[in-house]
Amino acid sequence: MTDTFQFKLLATDGKARRGEVSMPRGTIRTPAFMPVGTVGTVKAMYLDQVRELGADIILGNTYHLMLRPGPERVARLGGLHELIRWPHPILTDSGGFQVMSLSGLRKLDEQGVTFKSHVDGALHHMSPERSIEIQGLLDSDIQMQLDECVALPASPKEIERAMEMSLRWAERCKVAFGDQPGKAMFGIVQGGDIPHLRVRSAEALAELNLKGYAIGGLAVGEPQEVMLDMIDTTIPHMPFEKPRYLMGVGTPDDMLKSVARGIDMFDCVMPTRSGRHGLAFTRRGRINLRNARHAEDMRPLDEESNCPAARDYSRAYLHHLIRANESLGGMLLTWNNLSYYQDLMAGIRKAIEEGRFADFMAETQENWARGDLAPL
Image (cartoon, rainbow, N blue to C red; front, side, top):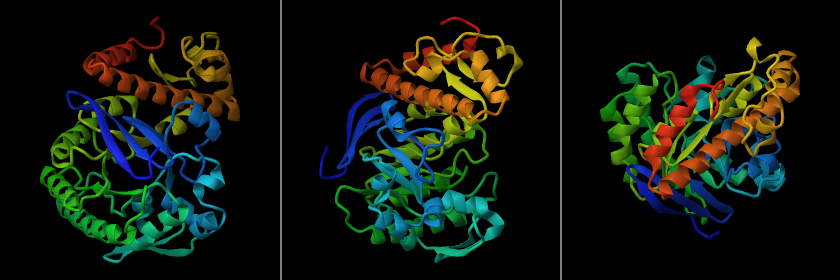
């Protein structure tokens, strides 16, 4: 641990990077997957379990936490770490993505966003300064600038307007953040699927000399190849010595291909949401436990896994739980999925250290392609 926020590159293999983010509450091994704890809980999991699976950091959401229980209340209760019993690093998303999804319930201008709560209809205003204030009250370790995220497809004019406003908001967020020892504020590159706007955003944010940088506005409706093209376009214009975070991504395949392009950090609701809906991620690829072919299959999801959910329960039982809408089914599959995501990241880190990331990537994709009926 350290009293300051530091990022150190330990190894590279092609464009893939193995690093460490060090801060007072702990070290984040990169590439890293951050489980999403939107309202202070990783759904269907105890946080002790999340830690045991290998997570160094979790994500909380400014928008949802400002609505309930409220940032001032969280501060009075000792901060988010104390409230949820997670003494390790927390990153808070600024809420820009959630505000985008409100569409008809919001009004956006230069000063920020005025919106109606999806919980009770109450009117709220979030400026860049208020977003940073809320994240400070939550006591998060990595705070994200307020940005405007635009769903794709969108018109070039709309994408450019949102990108330029996000740049102005980044400057205001930096001033509001000030100097918080041991903590960091990350800027967010926007620009949709337009290469020159991505470049403009990345270069302008780099001039602010922030402690880290994210790529936002992807995995919002565009095909994977477009997302990867935008990463390829953006990465050369991001500071090499700072951590790079791809927001809201994604599937194991998304992450593998993004690491190959130089991404260090990820978050996504995919493993938890999929688990609650009967979908398992494994070394053999995706397994839909709703399918009738699992009804009498006594094999576990993965007999070699260290995770009890994957190793000790039959597919027949998991199928029964999901079809019967029993909570335990979603709990076990979420446990399995988060375990697989963390195991995948650990494998990626080890492969980069050993200079064999390309081989690891090929082997992983080959195992997915074999399917869950083929032995490994």
